[in-house]
Structures are given as structure tokens and as C-alpha cells.
Image 1 (tube, rainbow over the protein chains, first blue to last red):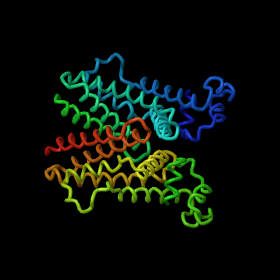
Image 2 (spheres, rainbow over the protein chains, first blue to last red):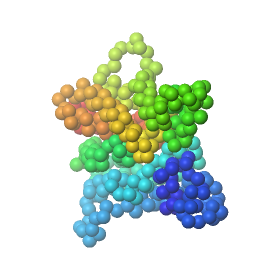
Image 3 (cartoon, rainbow over the protein chains, first blue to last red):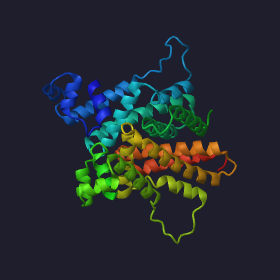
Image 4 (cartoon, helix red, strand yellow):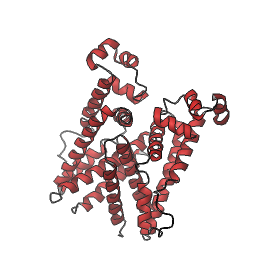
Length: 185
Length: 185
């Protein structure tokens, strides 16, 4: 799975060749087909792997430090995607390639939609801890906007057209705006 | 240029073959090289073409209708990227492919950054007409967030994981939030 994420980040989904993947993983192409059945299977499992890996991102924060408040936890969760870290870059690049390829590989759409929904729900839950009086639909649309913004800015950052620090500031400021909107600061 | 935009939207930048482009345009590969010099030239000029074409998007609104107020003009400018129109889909898909490829084709970064900056400045100018007392930096960051959000949601919509109408609602709501933030409604 690590090899698949690397190859997709490097070549895109359309440039993914099973021979290159096998060489990168140090196994035979037969083994790849045995495990994943076909190309669609490789893509689906790589998407899953990328999402699991993103869920495990850390900030390198001392685990013995005092627990974060809900606001800091929310900010940290959104900023995890905007870190100058090789793994984050590779993961986000591969995610962008998989998402873009869903235009041509419709079988990926359901998995992409589910992964996005889980992310939105996590952010909505964190927003709900800060704004307990907000409605569920208010929390969801705020989370959809924040995650959509992070995704848009992450693509600009990865493409070298937006400095990382500025992307992070824009996100923190959007958190401010959404919380204000939800009626609590 | 139209053929290049179509081929990039269909195959991605990495899948762009000059032979296919020549066939699509109905000309010889020699003519393509004569005009664009090399692959980098094709990409740069296609990016320019895509941006010019996006600047000409219309909503099909009656040109004799009463002029829009600044708020409606702002909303319309942002929603132009979220229209169920074949040309908008193709243009946005090609833009996404060119932006993603800038990770590997650094000569594109400057052109992408300039195109993004022009879009941000246009939106900041419209925001400024609604909120004349806001600071220039406040208008710019609001425009960066709104355009970043539109870009993120547009990618989700193109990938089939976000319904168009919902994407448009999220943008209109974000306009509300940013204007509230800028201190004027």
C-alpha cells in the first residue's frame, strides 16, 4: 500500500502501471493481482490506506503535554493537512490524484464520498463541542466549508502557488469566522 | 488551444501526447511544435487560454436586464465556476490537472500563481465595493478564502462527491460569513 501511494503521488492514477508498482513494492505483478484482483481493487484499497494514514497524522506534540481544549483540537485537526512533512505531501498529492480520477473512474466516487463525509463529521463534532447550542445542520455546513477550504488551499500549497504559513493563517481565520457564525466565540 | 484544453481535461497533463493533440486539432505535429516550441510552451499557452475562457463565462442572464448590485455581482462571479455546463466542467478539469502537475512542472507555478492572484484581486475588488471601509488586507484574505473554498468545492463537485446545488449554497453562505466579518452586511 505504501508503494501504491508513492507511485500514485508520483505518476497520477492514469500513470499507474502495475509493473512499476510491483517493482516499487519489491514483489511480482502476479502477487499484486492475487491480492487486489484488478486495477479498481488497487485504487480502492490505496484510497482506504491513504485515509487511514491521514487519520494517524500527528503534530509531533509532546504526548505528556496538557490536553488541548476543544478549540485547539479543532484547529489542530484542520491544520494536520497543512504540514511541511514528506508523508503529508505524498498523502495529499495521492488523494488529489484519486479524487481527480473519479471523474473517469466512477467506482471510486462512493469511497471518496464516504471518506469526505467522515472527515466532515469529525470536524462537525469538534465544532459541536465548542458551540453546544448550534444546530446539527449548522455544524455540518460549517464543517463542509472548513474542510472544503482546507482541501482547496492544500492543493494551492502543494502546487507551489501558496506559502504554507499563509494557508495556515487563512484556515485559522476561517475557524474564527465559522465559530462567530455559529453564535459562540 | 481548444483541442489542448479538451485533451488535458481528458488525459491529464501527464497523459498529453502531442500526436493526440495534433489529431484532435486536425493539424500536423510539426505545426504544433512550430507554434508552441515544446511541451512546456503548450502547457503555458493552454493555461492562459483556460483563464481567458473562464473570464468570459456567462450565466445566460438577459443582457438587457437591470444591472446587478455589487453583492449580486460578487455572488455571480464566485458561482460562475459552479455551473452545470460542459465548458465549465472541461475548463475546471483542465485547470485542476494543470495545477496538480505544477508539482512536477515547476515552470507552470509562476503562471498559476499569477492567474490565482488575478482572480483573488477581482473578488477583493467586488468585496471592497460592498464594504468600502474594510482594509485592503482584510479584503484580500477574505477573497483568498472565498476563491480557495470555490476551488475546493469545485473539485468535489467535478469528482461527483458533492451535489452542485449544495456546493452553491455553501459558497453563498460563506459570502454571508465573510461580509459579516468585514463589518458590513
